[in-house]
Length: 83
Image (cartoon, rainbow, N blue to C red; front, side, top):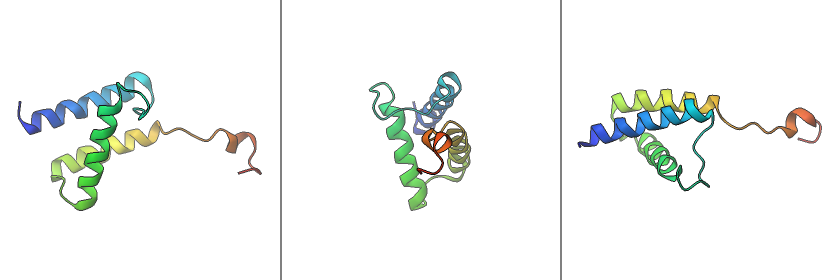
């Protein structure tokens, strides 16, 4: 299996996870830790400018999807003056 195939497989695994569980992978769950580390590593590559252009495009769409499932501070809606 080549690097591109592994990258695509992990990308598809994370997208499937997001659609299945309607949440982002958790750094506290052992099963999700590999996906979290993959996301962090690719973010570092993106910041350094070392992520390939086709991967960068897919990674940006993945991050937009992750933003959709970002946790929201419920206290801000119940107690807007306290925040």
